[in-house]
Length: 253
Image 1 (cartoon, helix red, strand yellow):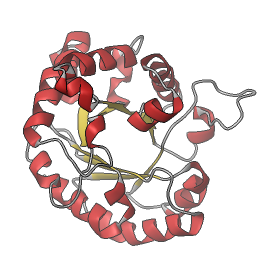
Image 2 (image 1 turned 90 degrees about the vertical axis):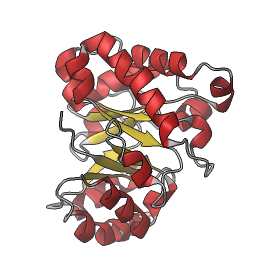
Image 3 (image 1 turned 90 degrees about the horizontal axis):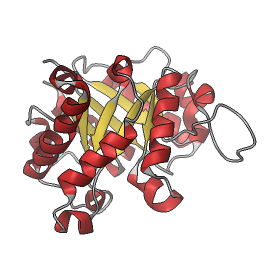
């Protein structure tokens, strides 16, 4: 089953307005020529509007890094799906840094995921294990559980918009990537297997699954060569135009 590769750049808390626009101005002419790869950048909230304007007419897509599950109200500092949907096509949900530093749980990840889908945003759902959980042999069980809880009350008709990112927490920002064999074991043995249990094998074959965690130009192709991996959620390397373009080129079928 053909799945279009997706390479998404999570800029995290980086780039001023001017820096953000300059980066996409460098990226656009190079990424627009990659017709068989979908490319996406996720700037901080402050840069979404100017980057959206800069991307007008480009094939490079725009996403947000998070959202709150309620539509409006007295929730200082939060951003809702209706605020994002006129600017963005995608939104990252449940990133491990949100779980680690800001108290997000599997339950709140589910609420955010459903809010995104309910407002026609495409969520990139992040799941993955810590080093302690991996060393305890809990990876497959934990990742399957995270996926089940995130998809609670998500109907099959909305699955076309969903992207899943397997991000082992111990590999994020550490320079220590999982091996392709590690990623293959989890994506097939936990993510696609659990998805198949919930929605059937056909749906499991359609959903795009990315790898994330210290992905760079030197190791990206080794992940993309595996049929089960459909691209990458890229952190630090997405802040450097040359590196991000090389990763996107490596994802081309």
